[in-house]
Image (tube, rainbow, N blue to C red; front, side):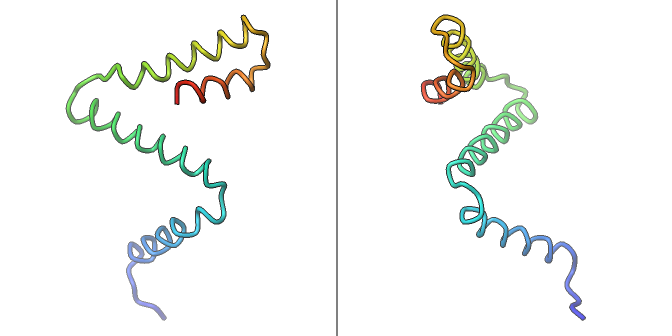
Length: 91
């Protein structure tokens, strides 16, 4: 029987999952997930540890929300296409 600690087994499973993820998942989706994870880490660092509130992060999300709402309401596009337009312009 293998006498390794659970932490080593868990780390090995996580490493294996990270290596196989681009082949099992859609790579563009994986990159977006990683970008949001980086955003969450930066936000945690700024607010949690430094106590600073960054309005730069909120500007991108607010701008994308405004673009999506404008495209859907004024141009009459479907909401799905409004979200795509907002992602393309603000992201």
